[in-house]
Image (cartoon, rainbow, N blue to C red; front, side):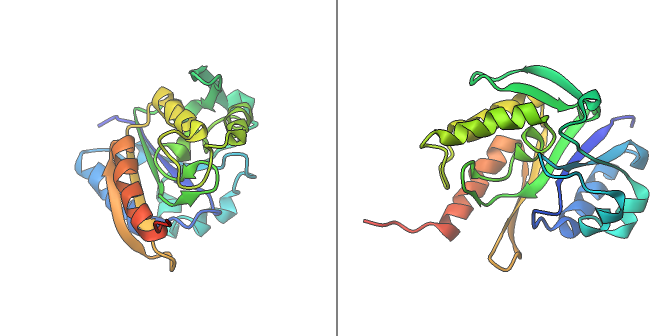
Length: 213
């Protein structure tokens, strides 16, 4: 199958258990006939300094580093950014050009509480991690809204802007884990990104929130 697959993974700043999640995902893709040479890992850097090739082993095992094409996103590399639209909140969506050329787009990460996006996970790895600095800055300016706070999802303007960016980009699937305080996997969710977020948030809330009168 000539389907070009993009697998978006977080950089070294996120505790995602790639060594457990990725082999199963790769095996499933190959069951469907996807060729090794048509799979590319995109490291979601956001505005972080892009990881260098000698750091890839920090987030991927040696076999994957050897077998697959890996691209560390650079939010300031304007030659590899394309503008695909603007969100209803006025965020211009500049996204990694080679990622956009892929036929199937999968994000891999974890769902946890986030201090202004409400929750990490879902399309965020691509909708922030693979976008240009202009997109990220405009989105993050929404953190000035009082609803852009930890544990708020539905009416969090910053998080909902991220969801809209994800739709414009066309993220197909999310593979997300929920971890405990020891970074051990409690549950893994796979499917359409919004459904993954809905189910993952339920578990995160059970783990991390208590009702106060």
